[in-house]
Image (cartoon, helix red, strand yellow):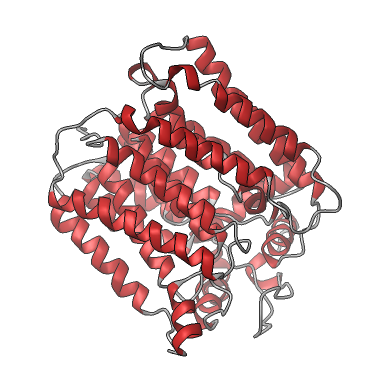
Amino acid sequence: MTDTPARSAADFGAPLLIAWLLGICVTFNGGAYQNDALFFLVLALAVAAWRFGALLVDAHAEPTSPRSVLPLVWIALFGAVFFQFNDPVPLQHAHGPWRLGPVTQVGALLLLLSYLPFLDGRRADSTAMRTFRFFGFAALLVIGGVDIIRTSPNPLIDVWTVQNDGARALLHGQNPYVVVSSAWTGPPPALPCPFVYTPLQLFVSTASYAILGDVRYALLAAVFVAGVAFRSLAKPSNRGALEVDAPALMLWLWPKLPMILEKAWTDPVPLALVALAVVARARARSLLYATLLGLAVTSKPTTVFLIPLAAFLLPLRRRDWIFFGTAAALPLLPFALWNFPALFYATITFQTQLPPRDDGLTLVTWMNRTFEAGWTGNAAFLLVALVIGAALIRLRRTTSSFAFALSATAAYLIFFAFNKWAFANYYFFVAGLSALAAAV
């Protein structure tokens, strides 16, 4: 498999800038609507349009070193941790102070300082130092994440409740799509919330609950795996230390990551699967790539947009499609046979019948608040189709992981920004895709 690399310093820096802007965007009101937050969302859209447009115009530009933007990347990472450290409400449902949070954040700032002597490229740090530094960040992620779960053991959000209830139901031989119903914690209408997640997520949540007693340990593991996958894709032997680590650090140091983990939002799971799929493809493991991609596209309903992008930009061979289809179908099949109407209602119908939310961080919310436009967000489907169509027409011969990741970033960013609602977890997934683009 051939794989065209990213082309320039801008194609390394711009995806990281998108991830950073989205991270700042969700700090203003915990990922809910706020006018200042919208400014950073619009900037992220502008950067994505700029680099995606440049890719469409010239998909085969000569690659150049991203070293020139590394000082700016370092400043962005330092700023992300600074935002985390000064967040007045890092956890919204804590039973007490998050004691290890500031400790891990100070540790991250100190580790970031260790890059400074090597940013100009004149000196290279040792392999041992690189390894120690990166896994120091990984240790801080795990320590802080475990302490989040300890500090906020019972978050008052339906997301966490239905996942734990679903795991308990499955372990007792019951169908979660039939028996699980939680009180709706969002704004009216207050419909009973079923188990709204896909069977794949149910299996992941159940394993985490059965082993460690909380579904969030699986999400923490997924964030860890995604970061390690990003670093693997960055080819450590050929790059400077920060160049290799930055995509993973942009994910691990994302300002509202503590809240993502606290509230048990499931987006780290599809992100980790997509990252692992790209790693498998980079290692020429085509059957593993097809299997992981099949799991990724059934991990959440919106991941279906990855199918046309992967099919044409990271194409599967005929035999691979069998593995892809099998991996996609196997988690769904038991519950489809058990009670298909209940599965379809919980995962599709329930979501589509909910009206637009006035607190969603989207341009639809802004239009409705500003002009009383009555937009529903349906235009998002047309816009994402246009982005995917442009990518397939212009980039289908590139066989490029970079083209795939940047196209996916643009597609999901415009889809969420023009939808009937979007919150911090939606933009975390986009930020992860954008960091993946920088990694490859």
